[in-house]
Image (cartoon, rainbow, N blue to C red; front, top):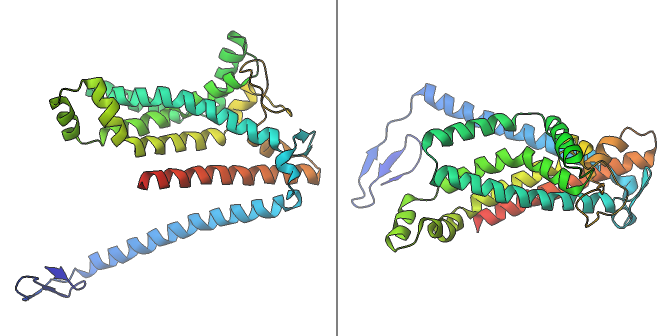
Length: 296
C-alpha cells in the first residue's frame, strides 16, 4: 500500500481500495514541526559560524595572496609558509602511521578477541583519555621523548605525542567499524576453512574499511589542529623538514597561527590568517575525501 500524505487515504496496490489513515494528534504534529524547525536552525547556526570563519580567514589572508607564500620558507615573521606546510604534512604522515597500526590493532582485538567487560572498560578509559587537555600530552612527550629518550625536539617525538592525543579516537572508530561487520560473514569465512586471523584480514577489515578511513580522517584532522603538544616536542623551524627523525625541529602551520597573529606587523598577521586558511582547506579536503571514500 502507498500513502499519499499525512492523514490522507492509503491506496492498496493490489486491489486499489482506499483506507482512511488516522491523523496524528495535534500535540505530535506540533512536536514534529518543532523538531524539524530546531534541527534546521541548528544547522543554519553551524553553517553561519563556518561561513563567518571562512570569510574572516579569506579577508585576513588577502594581503599574502602570492605564489611565494607557497614556494618560500619563513624568514623571521615574514616570507612564505613552505616549511610549515611540508612540516605539517610530514608530522601528519608519521602520526597517521603510528595511529593506524596501534588503533586498528587495538580496535580489532577489542571486538574479535577481548571479553565484553574488558572491551567496555577499555573504551571507557579511552573516552576519558580523549578528554585530557592536549597540553598535558605535550608535557609528557617532552619529559619522555625529548628528555628521557634523548631525541630532542624532533619529528619522532612530535609524531608519537600527537599519536597519544588522537589514539583514543582511532580506537573507538576502529572498534565501531569492526563491530558493524555482520557476524554471518565471519561465520561463512570460518565455515570455508579460513583461520580467525585470515578471516579478519580478508573479510572483516575490507568490510570495515569505510569506518576505518573515517577514523583515519578524524585522527589526522585532530592532529593537524594541535599546537600545544608540538610546542613541547617539535619546537619550530624555518627550514624544510629533515629526513632525520630525531634532533631536528620541525615547522608547522598551527605555530604560525598561534604566534604570528600576536605580532604587530601586518605581514606576520597576514601569514597567520593564510596558515589558518590552509589548515581549513587541508582538513576540509580530508573530510570530503573521507566521505567520498565512504560512499564508494
